[in-house]
Image 1 (cartoon, rainbow, N blue to C red):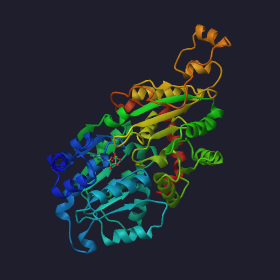
Image 2 (image 1 turned 120 degrees about the vertical axis):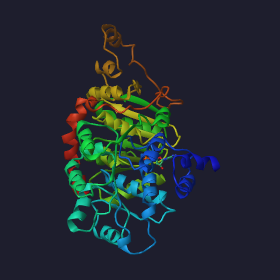
Image 3 (image 1 turned 45 degrees about the vertical axis):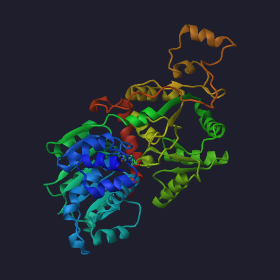
Image 4 (image 1 turned 120 degrees about the horizontal axis):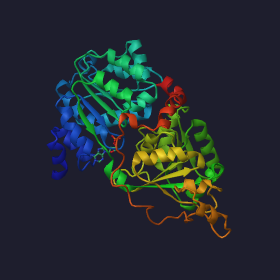
Length: 463
Ligand code: AMP
């Protein structure tokens, strides 16, 4: 226990916080915590490249709580509990998780926190705000509703966090964020966390941050080493069948499956249920209660497969998820990284499986460019696509010799491998995803933005 405490203590955290993280079983700080905690404690602004899964929430929540301790009051009076820290997040799920983190990390401190998001009645939130809270975690749209209602005030605010800033940008929240920032006291600490740094985020950072410390947590190192990636080339129309086959033959018990659209998620969950697989979908069209129920059933093992869209999956923290399957390959390579961040956590091994069709060729190339490694292709007998696309999908240029060989009736596809894998597909990457420079984003990711924003229209409205 002594060793456990000291690593966090050395970062400057006070005993109640050190004791709390020890109770939570954190044996040592993650890289982002190691670097960010002393900086945030010192009061500096911070721009951090860090993704979900790196421990970034504790990296800002722990030092913020510590900085608020001198203002903590035992009084029940709401006036003694003004909002002092605001965390903006892109999705309700992430807001809930960040708020839970503040609650857990602050368990031994007399500080209050609450979460504000759309899609639910405002009254319970108003009650919470009226009682007085030091920390508010919110999605931007609903927070502005409260501003308009005059149910939240920021005159005592001293810390602002933008969490997953790139995703907030993707979701069209930038104008809302700017409106919120304009309402805050000028003298404050600003912390910006983002997985990627497109130009708009850099511009925002320039206006928002004062002499910021910059951190780039290039990897979920431990995670990356534990995740194996594989792609199964498959004819598009056979994807669903292959998914059921993999789940059933491999006896998969807890799988997060990603689709590109909400309709696709619903349809796939329905089809899987017809194949007698316990499946549910989680996406922006579902009510908050439905989403929470779906997640709870998945976590408890009642549901084998949770089919999710990218947005619904943001911030989902399911410890030790063994498999993540990309039913639809994401158009944005960053989404691939976010998706696989759901597996290989907490020291467990994880598997990222992608079902790829000829149409996905460009998206696959962009993913491999971003993660700087080639993902192994494994053909499942009877499911591979036919024709010349096979060689291209296997990552080969279809040479004349290949074409000749394929013409021979005795020759099968390049490799046929039994789907019951006994060992990892390939040695893990030495490090995980580097944070791409602003202008390195794949063109298809850029093209996707408006589409994604439109897709998320419902979510945004609800937030
Ligand atoms: P985050 O990147 O903030 O979403 O955190 C990912 C997960 O890592 C959460 O489940 C945290 O509880 C967990 N976590 C955060 N810091 C540590 C740590 N130092 N040691 C072990 N687990 C941690």
